[in-house]
Each structure stands twice: as structure tokens, then as C-alpha cells.
View 1 (cartoon, one colour):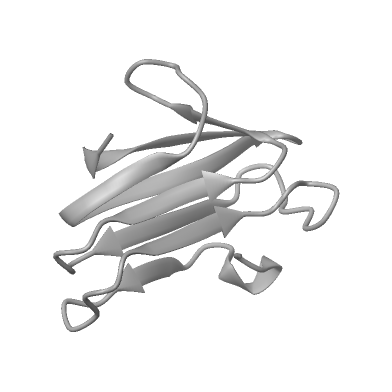
View 2 (cartoon, one colour):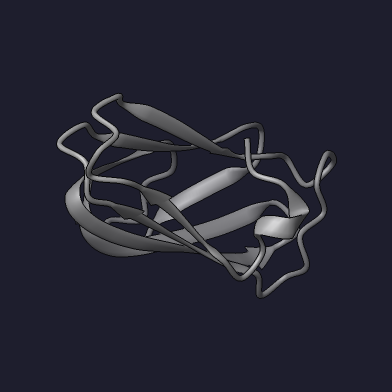
Length: 95
């Protein structure tokens, strides 16, 4: 689970880490990131990364659907907090 100190940083899944990972954006009621916070995720591993969110909403910018996302190898995506409980995510290798 991400923490407030991750704001404005990138979370990296190294090529040497062959374990699938889940990174979770916590609910606003738990960690109140300021609106406008951006967090970037990179994945160089052959194992996918799941980008999840607890009780708030994470919308894919391409199709506007909400929910967890999968980041494939060599993928990079950025989640942007746009409202107190809403994030938008976009990037390459993101489904």
C-alpha cells in the first residue's frame, strides 16, 4: 500500500524481481493525498503489476472504466488525483 511520502514519486518494479506485485492506492479517508498528486508506476519485470485502489475510484483515461489496472512489462503509467476520492490513470502497457 502506498503512503503519503510516495506523492510525486515513481514506484518501480525491477527487471530482477520476477514476482507479480500489487500496489494499492489507499482510500482518501486513510491517506489524504492533495488533489493534483501524481504517482508514476514503472514495470521492467516479466511479472505483471496490479495497480489497485481501496474504496475510492480509479478511472482508466482511455475507456473511463473504474477499477484495478494491470501494468505489463516495460509499461509506465501515472495516476493523478482529480477529486478527493477519484483518480485517473493513463499510460502504456496498461489494461
